[in-house]
Each structure stands twice: as structure tokens, then as C-alpha cells.
Image (tube, rainbow, N blue to C red; front, top):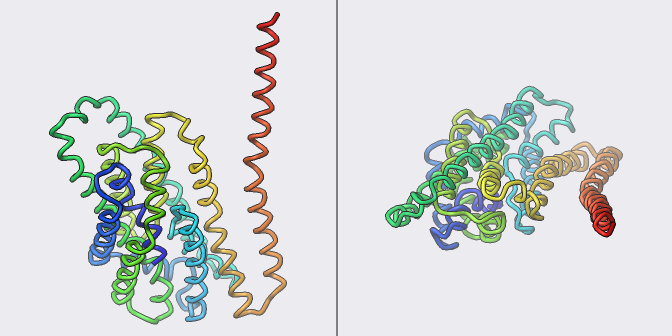
Length: 348
């Protein structure tokens, strides 16, 4: 359900932000698209999460509960903060935490996944930037009255494409550990998971939908349809390859690409953009630490390791939170010196 709440912004946020549909309709379409994606496929990503990061035999029922608890807690905190968070990142982070606790990891698979975590959002950002430039160049064509009547339907269709990709890729994040533990088959897992992810989009997705649709940058219909189409296509391709990619990051980076094409580097000055980037960096580590500590508490009873890892993580978060204010203070000080120097030269 938390995956549905977070994925709602990633799938129909553009259609809502551009004004093509109301918030309620956007959430219903998101739920429908998720179920359609479950029917279309998603088993490959389930297999990846269940056996390609840690050995499948290592994921017992208690371990599966720990992985899901760590991922759910991370997502719930993000949803309450109205921040779109990658379910793939927190789930993989939770699995890696268990692997570190047991000292068994398939490092090559993890590096491959992390590579695509970085590469695919960058590709989405660059493509969206190029599309934004093209839209600006063809402004007269985009403002044509006949196109204005067609574009709302087009942006809804591309939004549905992205919702379908959410069903194909993100449902696996919830059921992968359960399938690996042998509690249900892949088919049972994606159907049950799909139903609850769809319910989560309807019941909990409103605030994150508002963040992604309205608070990052203004989106016109043609730009919005391009963003949704790009994000949905990239995630569907990754799903067929069995890769758990961060759909929320892909969509948000597409929005940033559009924003940069119109406003330049000023788009990165918005507080919410900086906040999103910080949380994306911390979120995998957050779920990793939670799952690691849960293993040590309930399975290994090793409280010394909990104190050590917890202290390192808290120190990391502290450094991340204090870095920006210090930077701003330094920049402010430099700016003041430059102004004083200019004033002195003008008086001379």
C-alpha cells in the first residue's frame, strides 16, 4: 500500500500537474494502470529481488518479514513527509542490509542495479531537457487550438503507460521477498501485491501526487505527455530485463529536465529539489541500516553491532543536514564581500 502511495506521483503526477485530470481521477487511473501492469508482466523483477542480490535459500520467513518491515517503514516516513521515494531503492537497500548481516552478497548484481539506478534517471533527464527545448522552439505549433483539444487525452494515455510500468516494476518490490521465502508463487504474489498497491494509490497517494504534480515546476500538456511517455517506456524496458529501477526518480528527473530547459540552473535552487536529492541519497542507507539492525536484534542478538552501525548512520545524516546551511552561510559571506567591494569602487 505504501508503494502505491509513493508510485501514484510517479505515474499520474504529470497528468494532474498539467491540469488534464482532477486529483481523484488521477488516483483512480493510477490504480487501474497498476493492475494492468500486473497482468502484463512483472515476474522477472520478482526473480531478481528474490535470488540475484542474496542467495534465495537465505531468505527465510523471519528474514522476509525483516526486509518488508524495513522497506515499509522507510516508505511510510517518506509518504507522511509528502516526498516521492523510490520503492526499488528502499527494497534493495533492505535486502542488502540482510546480506551484510549474514556476510553474503552478490556484489556484481548489486553494482549492476546501482549503475542502472544512476544511468536511467540521467537518460530521462537529458531526454526531457531535449524535449523541453523542442517544445519551446515549437511553441506556436503546441498552442494551436486543435492540438489543445487532443493533448489532454494524449497526456492521460502516457500517464497510464507510466502507471502500467509501475505495476510491472514496483509490485515486485513488495512480493519478491515473500516469493523467495516460499510463501506464495510468483503469479499469486504479483496479483495479491497488485491489488494492495492499487489500494494504496487510492487511499494514500494524494499528498505525494500533489508534490510531484504541482511543487517542482510548472508543466504544460505537451511537456507532461513527453515526461510520462519517457518515464513509462524506460521503466517497461527495465522491467522486461528484470531490473528494479527507481521509477519515482526517473519521473522526477524528467520533470527537472523540463524545468531546466525553461529556467536553466535556477530549477535546482528550489528547496524541494534539494530536499528530494538528499532523501534519495539517504533512503537506501536508511532501509539498509533498519534491516541490518532487525537481523541483529531478532536473529543474532548482537547488540554491539547495532550500536556501531547506528552511530555511523546517525553521524552521516547529521553531516548531510549541516552541509547545506554551512554552504549557504559561506556563499552569503562571499556575496556580502562582493557587494561591499562594488559599493566602495562606485564611491571612489
